Image (cartoon, rainbow, N blue to C red; front, side, top):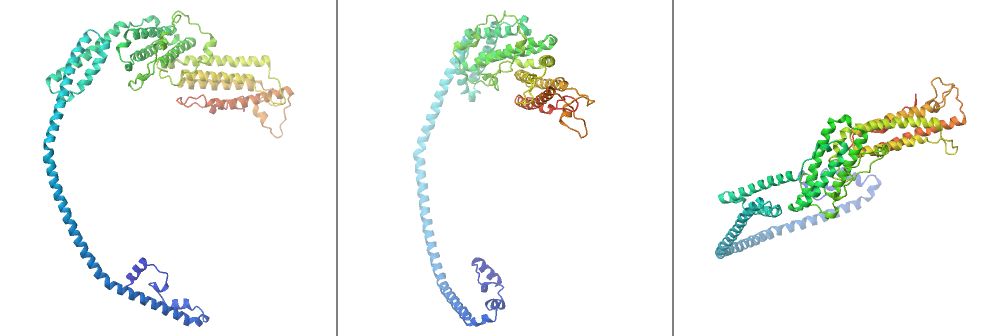
Length: 530
């Protein structure tokens, strides 16, 4: 009984204390009459409870009377539902029987039509196959005849058609006649390939050994340009444009040239000078830029060939005037070697295809920059002794030494030039050279030119200027010496800020980490750092 009450409360929740399972009459009465004065309303409370009891009795009576009719109505509804289900089942069975009869009639009607459709399809396939067989047999005969006559222009179109037709007979290769035709096509392809290679070997003579060294590297590129022009005039129309035969020849030439240059430079490494190296790199990068103007680079990606946009014949850069490229003497002024080269086009697909072979020998360039920077620092020292410090400017404070700006301009120029040559180990080696001469500049130009004092046994340093110790004797300087000290401090601050700026913008993303900021603590004397 207790469980039934709990279930009823879950279904019909009630806040009335009388509906609770743990109802306590004494507590309920104490709730209604908490004090003696509240007993004055006992009659009113009793009347309300009696009214509530009468209402509950009426509700119970109504519910009981209603339940007597529910059972009879439910049985009647169930009987009617069973009758309706029986009628529905009968109708479904009738529909099923009629559908089976209709399906049988349709099968009988369409049986003959299906047979005619199969016969028509087989007849069409047979006719198409016979036509293809006739085309294949005639195409193979023509292909063999044109191959013997070296009619490459006609063979190019015919061969593709014969191969396409042969694909229709892949499932008939068990038939001897079809297999024989397939073997004749493969034999014709092999013979055609060998014949074309032989013609190319005969048409293109090999380079001589006279143009092997770097001082004659431009003759290599002049030779391939002439050969490509001659090829386009004689054989260009024999191959479809989407084969990109001219580009393939140029790319193969680049691979061979890179390999041969690498070999000869390893053999004659002691003969490589910086002027000669930069001359070869310049001519090579110019040639790579010329390839980018003429070709799309579609043969370089995954071995697949994309149909390029064929430029007009008049825009062929290989037709440029080449007079003088073989006879000009190699004369490179020192200013040319120091001048930054024109930045390469970022989207040049041929960049590095030949010039990559020069990277192992860029140490010659690094050694040259080391020597040039040493001479530059010596010149700065001589200029400072000859011209003295910059004139003081009371309004603006200490002026930055002009040599400092010149040094960083040279650094930036060298970094840009080296990044165009290589962004690998040579760039890291160059930053090491930069670190070396930052220290040289700080020692020889900054710390070395501080005013001398007699109060400090170790000499004047920037640290002693910035730190004032108690009880120590303060050094006295003239106005010119104070201006010089301010100028040196301003120059040191400029070096620090500029080093931080140059460290990241010029560092290529593919280069190994080389952070100049970790070397901004460049010694300018004992106890001083930039």
